[in-house]
Every structure is written in structure tokens, then in C-alpha cells.
Length: 489
Image (cartoon, rainbow, N blue to C red; front, side, top):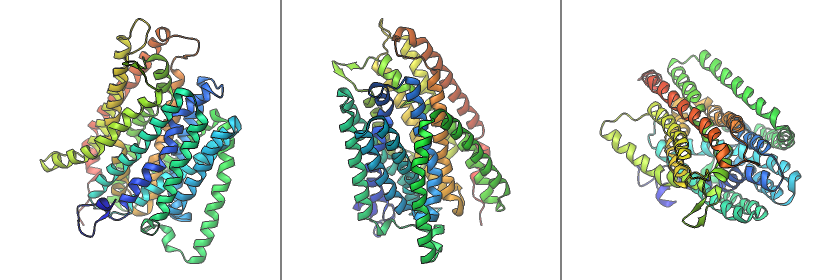
């Protein structure tokens, strides 16, 4: 931590507080990692849900988690402060995981409602706490977000590993109780660094003490009301999924109108670039969100999980992703720095188009693996490894860079909302991924030999679609560069 935060002596290192946020990010991710990787399996194997019902709930879970990020940026910056909302959200996650562990189907819905209220609102707060440590022109922001993204994926690695261990014995109660521990540690770490994590230049900083208290009370009331509302929406998952897609479309239109009416031309151009990049990223995140849904069920049923005599839990497959992220994040930061010094123009539009090519290849690898499946129809484990490596490289190109670009493209007064809107894209993608998962073959009562052709067809369509979107985005690179370029003062 001291290495990352010692900015008073070393200009090259990131500002004070960034190191603490790395560790807070790691521990705050554990509970989400457990639910993200296990919810579909828990619902089908323990609670008796059908694959279709489980995919729908998982889609809504992702949608609310990411969709509430948009509101989190607003609520944190204007009512509760980012650090207050983060801690309150973590408390809700602790209680939510405990309910899921101890109270069956009823506990699942109430627990998910509390967990989603917490995780949905506080992730944007953490990103805002980090981005506020930097001035807009500070080039160290990208490296800091890559480090922070590596910390998040370290949390995913631990969460997936523990989830897989308990999955092999289906000891879900112990697993969900474990999830509460990481969230509790994140609360302690945040409180220990409370003073250095205070908000910088948010609307809440501009109000007097009386207005501050009033806003705090309103913010807490919103949290209390959100829990039962999400509880109801979870029990009507099909309706909620349509609602999220429609809401996402409306928000995109609103942001388009805000951009069109923005008077400062330099900022307006960058807002246009933001909207184009957000639209392109929807394809990436839709494919990426298949991991806990259709791709998880494919892995459970159509892949030979006995590797060198050792049984691999389905959740452990997702640790391929975390290993690539944790190792590749810092390496990519160093590689990009080296290439830029040698004159390569590696910027946001190029990285986004590269991400779409990578995840497209990750999908196209799977039909190839299915083609070479054994006589029992089970695909060799190496093919899913190759697929996840491609997907993870794509994620490194788009996700931390996407967070970092908000500070570069968003006007100061829109940063919280635009950070939330950026994460809302992933929420809509989660619902779309649940729809795509519904198009995949049903494994119950079937065999890999019968379901492989259907899987192969879906993966081919997804892979080539992503590659085509990458080509379109690459053709738009010159336009995006002109829009992003800052006009000299």
C-alpha cells in the first residue's frame, strides 16, 4: 500500500488513497464473485428451478446490479457521499448473503434484494473515489484503473476458487456465509482509511450542514425503499428484464438529447464519442455476460471436466479469466506505455475494436472444440481455456479503459451519471445474455451429442457478429479520434 500511495516523494506513483482502494476493491468483490458464479447452479441443483428460470433470474441479477450503478453515481455524489454509500451498500450485502445462506427460497429473494441494492449502488462510488484522486489531464489514471481492475479480479479469483470448492460438495450454506466475510473486511478497510477517501468536487461538497443532513436522510430513505421494490421485481423476473432493456434505451436517448443540447462544443464532441463507444460495447458485454448463464450450463454439461484425473468445478473455469486479468492488467499497462513511447497510437477507439475482435474469437473457438469433441460429445477442456483467454484479453482492453475514459470524456458535472450510464450498459447486456442463453439447447434430459449442434450454431452467430461489430468500430476510429481530441485553449 505504501508503494502505491507515496506520492509526496515519487511523482510517478498514484495519489494517496489509490492503494487503499486496490485492497478495498479486492475484498468487496468476494460476495459478488460467489453469487455471480453460483446462482444458476444453486437455483437449479438445490432450489429446483428450471434452467430457463435460473437464467432469467441471473439476467435480472446482473441487470439490477449493473443498472443501479447509474443511480449509485447520482445518489453518492448528491445525497450520501460516495464513501458513506459504499459502506452502507456493503452492510446490505453482508445481510443479504446471510439470508441467502440461511433461509431457502424466501431468503433467496430477500437476500438478493438486499445484496443487489448494496452492490448495485456502491460499485460506482468506489470508481468515483478512485477517479476523483486524479485531475482530468493526469495520464496516471489509466494505470491506476488497471491496477484496481487487477485487484477486483483478485477478489473474483478467490471467490470463484472457494465457490468451486463448495460446489463439488454442494455445501451452499457455508459458501454464502463465506461471502459475508469479504464484505465485512471491505467495510473495516474503508473505515480505516476514512479521511483520505473523502469526496472531491462533488455537488454534495457545495451544500451547508443543514442541507447535508437533509440529503443524508433522503438517501437513507431511498435505500430502505429500494429493497422491497427490488424484492418484488425479482419475483417478476420476466417483466423486470423487459423493463431494464426499455429503461436502458430511454436512458441512452436522454443522454443523446443532453449531448445534443450541450453548449460547450469541445465537451459535446467527447460526449458524442462516449455514446458511440457505449453502443459498440453493448455487443461485447452481452457476450461476456454469458459466462454465469448459458456458458456456465454448457461448461457443466458439455465439457469434459475431468482433467488429468482431477475433477474441475464449473466455477474454477472462470478463474482462467481472473488469472489473465490479474497477471495481464499490469503487463498491459507496461506494454501500452512501451508501445506509445515507440510511436504506436494505442488509444480508446483502437482498444475497443480490439476487444470486440478478441471476444468474437473467444466465441468462435467453441464450435471448433465441439467439432473435435469425443464420442460421448464432451468437448476437451483446453478449448474453453482458449476461449476464456481470448475473452479476458478483450476485457482488459475495454473494461478498465472504459472506467478510466469517463474522467477523460465526461464534463465534471456529468461524471457520476456518465459513469453510472456506462455501467448500465452491462446491465442491459446481462438481460440480453439471458435471452441468448434461452436460445441455447436445454440440457435437462438430454445429452452432449444432442445439444452440441445447437450450441455450435449459437456460438458461431455470436462470434461472427462480434467480429463484424469490431470491423465497424475500426472504420469509425478516425471519427472517434477527432471527437475525443481536446481543442487547445
